[in-house]
Image (cartoon, rainbow, N blue to C red):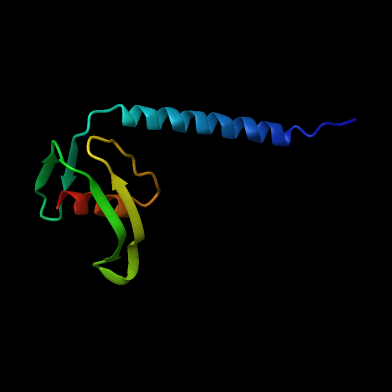
Length: 104
């Protein structure tokens, strides 16, 4: 009788990856909120506090340099006052534009 260990090994590797990712997310959520956002004109805007809730409803945004390319496509979310959130994803351009829209 032979046992195929490959699925068990893959599951163990995925478990370690997920465990590390959750640890990183918890670490980020426990940090103090202080965003330093660089805009196109190289000025910095530091956000110390935003009062009230932030709500996006069906927000879409095209790339200004390539109008046929969508940066945001019909996203919706609500951030209640005093809550921390985390945007997770591979597209840094989209996360940057969400923060720029929030900051004004």
